[in-house]
Amino acid sequence: MSFSEKVAAYLIKNKEIKNDDQQEILVFGAQVFFGLLSGIVITLLVGYLIKVHVQVFYMLLVSIFIRKTAGGAHSEDPFHCLLITVFVYNLLAYIAIKTNFLIQDYMGLIILFTFFYGAIVVYLKAPVESPQKPLSDQQKKILRSLSFLVVLSLLLFQSISYFYNGNQLNNYAISLIVIWQYLMLTSSGDRLMLFLDKYLNIIIPKRR
View 1: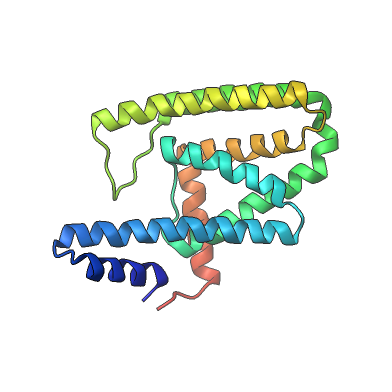
View 2: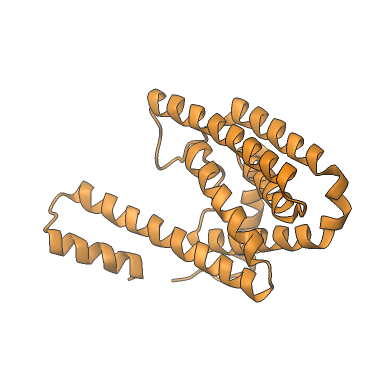
């Protein structure tokens, strides 16, 4: 039994929850919460070890707002999701650090590209539903509006940083992860996640 399942079992017993549906919701909620928390901690820890944790922190912060409003492609396995998250965030942060000197004169264009790319993808695709959690029409409408609000807020945040911060490294790292997150809303993102799942299934034995 995983830690999240133990916590859920404790709460079910402590609160004397008898309803099966409520028990399933509590177990699912605990798995999502602890999965998210462990993913953040491990991703930041790896970032700290390779000295990209500052960029990774901003990237994670921005991604939370995008994923919670627009959704996106998911891995079939929580462990795969953790590995992909740790790898992608730290790789993009590392790329940002190593190539930052190349884009200093073009950061304004990168911010505009990020904004228009995000706006177009959100308009065409958001919100992306999870098969396990279908959305009502009202929920879709609200999440779609919130997704556009996130796109506009990112433009505002990045623009302020661009005009008042000489070093554009964090801005650059944010743009890279935003592009990745909006890619996850598309069919290309779905295919990429399926490919990564198949690859990880080959190199990592199934856990029992």
